[in-house]
Amino acid sequence: MSLLGYAWLIRELALAARPLAVESRLGTRMRTTQKAGGATRHEYPPQYAPASDAVGHLEFALKHEYVDLCLLRDVFLNCGAAPIEAAIRARPTGRYTRLLGFFYEFTTGQTLDPGLEIGGNYTDALVADECFVSPTPRRNKRWRVWDNLLGDSRYCPMVRRTPAIVEGLAMPLQDELRGLVADFPPELFRRASDYLYLKETRSTYGIENEAMPPADRTRRFVALLRSAGEGNLAGLLSEAELVKRQSLIVDPRYAVPTFRENHNYVGEQRPDYSQRLHYICPPPQWMGSLVAGLAHSAQRSGGLPALVQAATVAFGFVFIHPFEDGNGRLHRFLIHDLLHRGGFVADNVMLPVSATMLRHMPDYDATLEHYSRPLLDGWLAYEMDEEGALTITNPEQVEGYYRYPDLTAQTEYLIRTVALSIREDFAEELRFLRGYDAARAAIREIVDLPDRRLDLLLRLLHQTGGRLAKAKRQQFAEIADEELERIRTAFTAAFGPSA
Image (tube, rainbow, N blue to C red; front, side, top):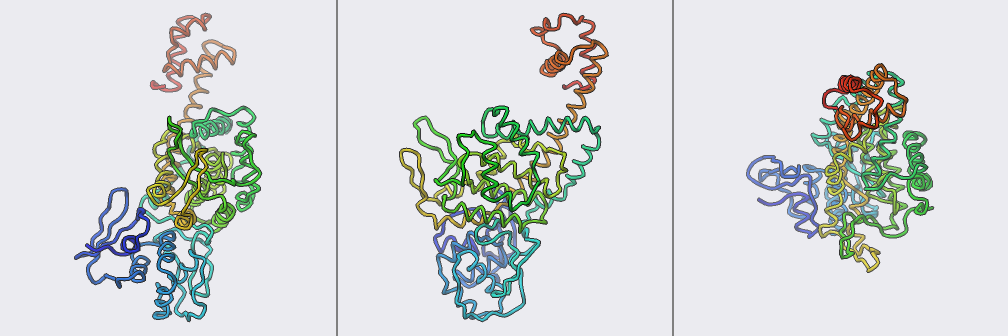
């Protein structure tokens, strides 16, 4: 079977191989199958065959596949302006020829022949049934296109409406979260919230295999989390405000006054001191435009479901990686900020998203690698000197991948993670605190222990499933065996037999 659309263009133009969400082939009948990894394969009968040139397959891709801004840019740079201009002159009112003109100028920054005469009704750049679009489209008079993209030429993410996302957004997660909160007395919930802020801080450092920071930095990170949703979003994503927040969460020696000025990468050192790379970040000279584009994209995505906006902003930030240190922690703070800002989480609620990520680290790592892996699989070329300084040697060939990321997989991941966080981590923490209060009150009825000794006893009982270990028995010699048995029974009643 012959390849069609994007797959044909990659092969015929010898473009860098990359995963395709949709692969089309020419066959004998209409058929759709799912490939490993979630991609879709479409088979089309002969009458669907386009003209056997780049323009024909570009139009086929826009009509039957999806919009891939990075791949479109690569094709345009490869084939040049002439075939696009010729197609527009031949069909100046055609929807797909006008879209080719619009996307050509959007992705390449180059202007097609200003004398091209364009007609036809306005058409949407993206089909809202296929992907998430900006609620505030802009009129592009030159191409008679409604620009409903989630960004501009500096940075523009894409999120496709996959079944996993559609089904995930249909889950009543906010109702479940509100129901959990409503089931607990305000004082208990206040204590739970205080604890969850601290747990989220521990977890976000734990994800990066870092020890709990000193008390003052812990307090600063908790304060940062408590500020989620405050102020103007564009201001939050400015260089000055991001620098301010980075300084709160890193060792003061590594706080910086500006975005990074060297080429950063994420990796681990092998025993021979060579590097095993996990991700190569975009060059430092793009930081200003990428982060400004991210801020603009955040504004363009306002009004989308909070989980979608949080994914595009937070994962967009971590893939831009504007600092030497602190990017991951700021990325996870931005998830909280966007969920609060979008009204998904109430102001007084701390959802332990990082704790859930930490419990399921392979899933988190796989989500990051889903984006980073294609770059490292032979697409990106680089040099590294003996001191570990890295330089990308083909920046023009990979620029589109950094500026126009497909964040569908990351959005699916965030929806799954938030659902787990609500249904497991958040619910479990509330149940634990309710059990802790009940056990505390019941034990006090048996032996009126001082607060610190009571807390120690509860901690030891919790570590051993409700029975005090023999090695610890002497620490509570003043408690009779009969009293200790009653305490064990009270503890089990409060927490359940599997405590």
